Length: 387
Image 1 (cartoon, rainbow, N blue to C red):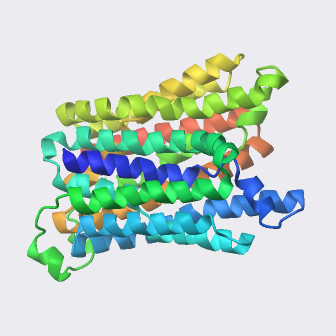
Image 2: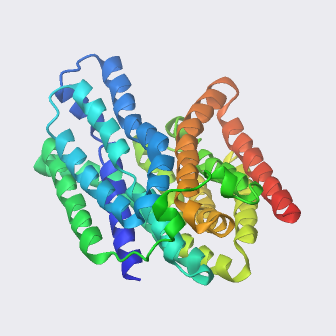
């Protein structure tokens, strides 16, 4: 239980640090010498995406190193690396340094994915879904709270000081990780590093491939409306409240997932993780259809909240299914691939949503995402039946 509490706190603080700069990033880019409006927008997008890009590339590597050298050691590395990187971001002197340090933060980070690996490996199988659900709630809470803190702190203490404070909080996570987390002794095969490779040691690869695809779909479903949300909401509410309602729409799904993750994880431990995955995907597919035909802002907020409740069970169940279908010595590496798939969804979702919304129509974004989620539910059902 102590490991779970520390991992949830650490995941929350590091995700907050990765996302808090979203509201004030253009202002910081301007402070660093970029003056043209188009260039400010462009550099802001590059700087924000840089962390997730490098994190996606390195997640499998950190997972495999965790299997070999210890999951706690990787959490110590990630928390200390993030504390240093966030503090250095507050000292950047030009936009190139900002992008490079954001890349460094993604490269050195990975605390949330490392926590998922440690909790999945050390929790008894009968409680894996519940524990991973609690951890997922901490991760999603970080995604929700990060931009809110980023909107409040800079006017009070300054932009650079905000990064320094974030670094200090993550250093507390580093201390808690180093002194409070206890890791079980790993098998000799894992410590020796003498393995045949990740995929070669997986007896049945179909469940793992299905979970990688499901993680990708989850993030596509969450992120596909990002490019169109403000324009879509503008058709539903008065101009003066567009940004406020758009923010509520984006936050509603995250809030729903925070509330449901541990409960659905606990239910999955009882009735089966595959059942919850299929149910979550099917319900999300159904809830996406009326989102294309709403006539009031509150209807969209309510539907996104309900969709968040449904999707909350996916992250813990994805990790649990992977954990139950791969050897202990390979769990970290495969869960690392799962994290990379989710980061890929965070990139593909907005690109796909923007393209479809711009060329076909905004309603098509919701309907197309619904089709993808339904296909995911059918695909998972087929894989489960054929196992």
